[in-house]
Amino acid sequence: MCGIVGFVGRQQAAPVLLQGLSKLEYRGYDSAGIAVFTDKNNITVEKCKGRLKVLEEKVDGGKSIKGEMGIGHTRWATHGEPNYINSHPHVGGTNGSDNVAVVHNGIIENYIDLKKYLQTRGYNFVSDTDTEVVAQLVDYFYQSTNGNSMEAVKKTINKLEGSFALGIMFNNDPEHIYAVRKDSPLIVGLAKIGNFIASDIPAILPYTRNVYLLEDKEIVVLTKDNVAIYNIDGEPIKKEVYIVDWDVSSAEKGGYEHFMFKEIMEQPDAITETISPRIKNGQIVLDDVKLTKEDINNLDKIYIVACGSAYHVGVVGKYIIESQARIPVEVDLASEFRYRSPIITKNTLVVIISQSGETLDTLCALREAKRLGARILSIVNVVGSSIARESDDILYTWAGPEIAVATTKAYSTQLSVVYLLSQYLAQQKGEMTQKDTDELLQNLQLIPAKIQDMLKNCTDIQYLASKFYNAKDIFFIGRSLDYAIGLEGSLKLKEISYIHSEAYAAGELKHGPISLIEDGTLVIALATQPRLYDKLLSNIKEVKARGAVVLAIVQEGMDTASEVADYVITIPKCDPLLAASLAVVPLQLFGYYVAAARGCDVDKPRNLAKSVTVE
Ligand code: G6P
Image 1 (tube, rainbow, N blue to C red):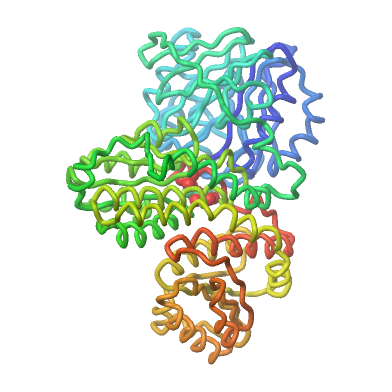
Image 2: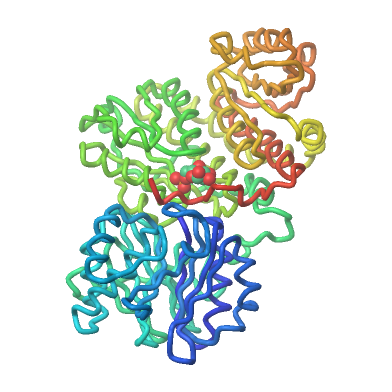
């Protein structure tokens, strides 16, 4: 994870770097630092433990370091605890000569071997990080090539194993920033005020929409007037400029207290943006999917592979695709899939789901599936991300930038794409008629308005959050699709409020979890599926009999729930297959209000980061 930024241009670098880092804090916020090539003709490093605001204060908003070129970093600690010494930038050089400054996102897997080697060559290390090894290695090659920066960078890259996005400056070079990536995101921004590198687009958006998307091991050399890109053999590469089509306001809070709340509120529009272009004259049109009818009819299995909330979308997808398209679906956590010898044939489709398109486990799972011969269809939010680029077919979610660590609108748009994909597969296979498709599409198109209605009045949820914000444990139960929604509701709650929470398939309660129910334990029972409603009511009675307080989430018209549950939240009536899209909303709000009531940092929960680019 971690966020990196670099700038060389015609104005003071430090404030620009700090501004860029403020947009990357979602990637990690254990410590922050900048290195600026100062007017005194050397690199000055300022860094500190903690949030970016501590650094901002330390450098007086950037005013205390003068210079027009620099690199910056916001850290999510992997190697070494979050402290001053382990903060980036790291410097390289023997005998206290800080010849090189480096910021890094990723993990250098062979750093111990490299460190030992460098120690035998007179290099001393002060931090526990893998990154310091990169800084020292660059210096080592810089010395051994008689000060050839490009050669030093190339040789360094060839020695590194693992993942990296790097920004590098040399102490005797006031004009150039070097940058390179492998399996960690990095873009180049081309602005009037100068040129940038950054882990993500929001960092440069106040200055430019023109970016280069980099491939692995492409080396970028930035000056204030020029960006040159080379392959690992040092040959120049020509790139197309990609023009970002969303604006700064999408990545700003816009008057809301938290990004998470803003993003919850944006869900109706995000879903509309995502589904509308794919419904034309009553037909599902998946322009970016090249699977033919024959391919679909030959599919022997679908794997849905993802992490976190995207995995929960996959769990919904399994229920839906199996029931509609009658294709066997396995849902896998990417971190498990990639190491478990999955059985893949040429007729296996692997559906990858990822907001960022950069989650390392998911990316590696994609590569493993590809290596084994699967066809890859990805559902991704970030255009041009690694997962998007390495997939055979892409379905973009058009959620816009999502900043809060806990996903909401990306989850909802992923769900809506899964509905379209499932119906499309079913229709191509002849499992569904045009009439079925018409109905589903009509119902799907009503979802944004229904969510909008739910969002107009959040007072019930707010009240419940104020009642239970001090709970020790909260359980979610449900069957089938309701179980899948419970998984997401539970994750939302625990990740931002730090309340212990679990989601169980309601039928499994009797096999263990019911022993955890005590007097007053809150159980959130999802009962939106008419065919399983009565079974859920029985499960509610079972936990009530053990002292639980129950909040039931049901569809309009399921009135008997109020006879057994203590509290009932009603979602608008909908096709049961689409209920996840509505039922997740009160759960997102519940998590949000509980976390806010507890005074938690809703958008930046402890220990987490949004884009998980390490294993
Ligand atoms: C992190 C985020 C989650 C996200 C997961 C997978 O844990 O906080 O919101 O679901 O990563 O990320 P991806 O970008 O692949 O969807």
